[in-house]
Amino acid sequence: MMFGVVNNICEATIKVAVGRIGSPKVMVNAVIDTGFTSFLSLPSSMIESLELPWSCLDFGTLGDGSEAVFEMYTASVIWDGQIQIVDVAASEAEPLVGMSLLYGYDLRIQAIEGGIVSVQALSELQ
Image 1 (tube, rainbow, N blue to C red):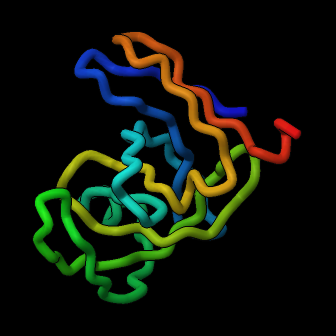
Image 2: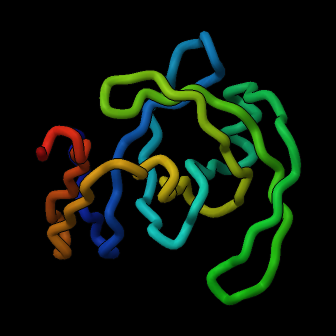
Image 3: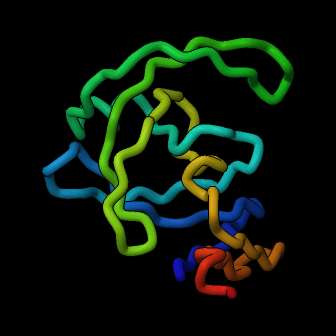
């Protein structure tokens, strides 16, 4: 099980260890975005400092319905104690955790400032 917190502007956040495959990881505080279908987004400056390898271009639909092109990179993350290889979208917004990383997990949010965010594998609930 993983835990995070609801910040002072009511965003559910969680820390994720991310880095280049086979390299040391950096802890990143990311906002959970259930409207984001990919795994993870990071600012370009962070992608550059982690030296993540470029993967491809991908198209996405933003919250306002407009289409955008995203540069995609490959990273290694520690998620629920396990190393996973994930796609990372370059975005100048704050880091985001998307639904692909949350897939197979139960997400609970105490929707108040300072509230607890918990993420637990569905397999642990059965």
